[in-house]
Image 1 (tube, rainbow, N blue to C red):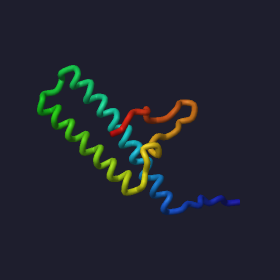
Image 2: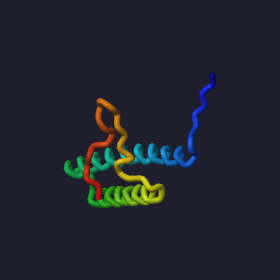
Image 3: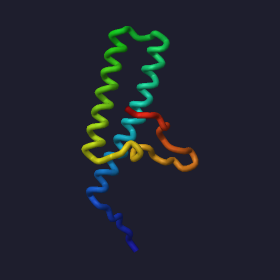
Length: 94
């Protein structure tokens, strides 16, 4: 007996967008932590700090716009990894 995967095209697109945004959010959080560490250590010039802050704000705005466009909540981006917990730490978002 051959099994076929039955999918709703709209749901597949939504799930794919969720997966991509989850990966982008994970990278954003890692970049933000690295940036804060570098600022705390004094590794960045004032101009670099300003540019990095602006880039992170633009990324956050783009993420918010995409989540709104595809009706995705922040909780939808946090994959449950079973016994390992969730992929993303529970950090407050603006």
